[in-house]
Image 1 (cartoon, helix red, strand yellow):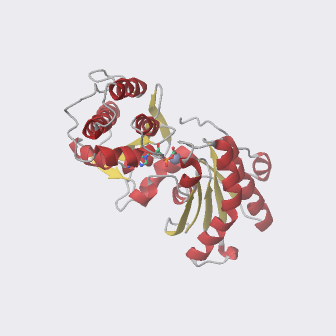
Image 2 (cartoon, helix red, strand yellow; image 1 turned 120 degrees about the vertical axis):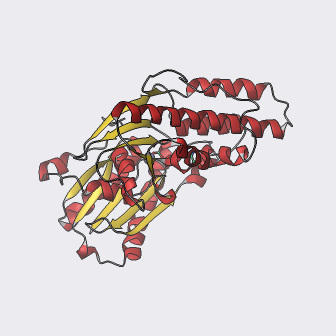
Image 3 (cartoon, helix red, strand yellow; image 1 turned 60 degrees about the vertical axis):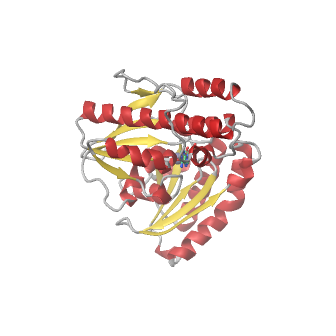
Length: 328
Ligand code: KG4
Ligand code: ZN
């Protein structure tokens, strides 16, 4: 049995999985209410809350899995990328726990974890595929080869897609996290009325860009009357549509350039209803991460750990958290 721990941002997560990938428990203790008043994640608050929440979250995960600690065979932990103080809480806990119980420790890249969240889908991809990873910190196209090796083929030149949702939501006076709030405001408003230009439209760059869109929204919001609720909904719908169109266009380009015929879609933004809808336009087999595994969770970390080797005793002693990833 694998005990997995994830504390890279503002969710304190623990999960228990069997070696063949059955999830026995996956607990996510969200800190959203701690950060909402500040309009975004405050790193220092996140670290302190992880310290308070991690032990009880692990205990709950073990209890919900219905297993005894003696049945654990491995500990897996996110070592990066993410907020360094937040990561350090999970890494220190996992090291101490693995030492105390004499268990092997596996260090997992958070982005690899998101890619592995596809293994939690009803029909996971088998063999080589392309992955669109859209989260609060990253927007990537990652090619997964037959042997499971990962190669990033496209990154964002500026903001991440989730960041674009969060910043857009703030401009429209909505709360944090912005993605679900902005999607809610967009509702059924017509995205064509105040259409924004799709970033990099008509170009064949394998890259993403969202910062121009944010500036365009800021200018449009300024020219809106303060009580124009309908206008705000239309702006939200157009902004969301431009982000989604950009993601779908780049995914299409990535599929064409790699020749892959299966696209996996993962990360917090993969929960967006309009994106999930529009992905149907692609001529590819689309595999979506389950809604419960789009946002950060430890089950995906356990899934990724199944393909990795445990650290040697020396590597375990020197394991440190890292803010950046070679995939990012
Ligand atoms: O993967 P995730 O939970 O954390 C990171 O690794 O960053 O992604 C969080 C991001 C936030 O920016 C949030 O606004 C966005 O995912 N998000 C959404 C939706 N749900 C979460 N964006 C658009 N629509 C949603 N329904
Ligand atoms: Zn994430």
